[in-house]
Amino acid sequence: MVKVIVVDDHPIFRLGLAASLAEMEHVELVGEAATAGEVLDLVERTSPDLVLLDLHLPDKSGLDVNRSLAADYPNVKVVVLTMSEDHHATIAAVRDGARGYIVKGADPTHIEHVIHSVMAGDVVLDQGVAQAMAELAQLRAATVSSPFPQLSPRETDILELIARGLDNQTIARQLVLTPKTVRNHVSNVLAKLNAADRSQAIVIARRSGLGRIDEHG
Image: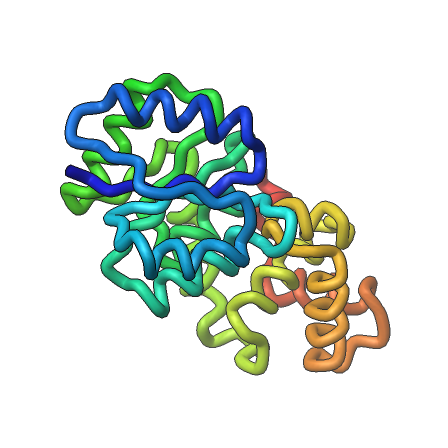
């Protein structure tokens, strides 16, 4: 049996997903959580094989939970739950250890397929996400020798989106971060680039090749 935990703050969605899991072969729901704060304790108590994890939780980003699970419980596989085809959030989750994603409202047959595929060792992504990840890998490769080695991977992601002209609220939605966290990252990026303001940071980033995916898209 594949032991599964569902983490989502919407009771009706959890109820529907639990009903679907109950009908699946060799799948057992062993726990449910509505907040990020409940997850690690629940995992410790139930020893699941797989966690179905909503990225939008009331107390903390699901991306943070995903990173904690990868660090503390590397044998527990994570599949993220999203409301839409949010490639940025999915890429961030997979980069940090998730094994795939499911769009809420997906057919139970698809959910069952994803669960068993992930347990068999696969990473389950659709073509759009796979292409976006390939583009990100190319971007990262291009910026390895860039003038921004002082930036962390997350700060590089932030700078890339700044270079595309996105505001903090939009960046927060795409990376599943709080606006405050994004503001802090932006401040750090400006300081590390010695940029006087956001406009100067955009100029510096674009001169180094960031923001090109958006311009060509």
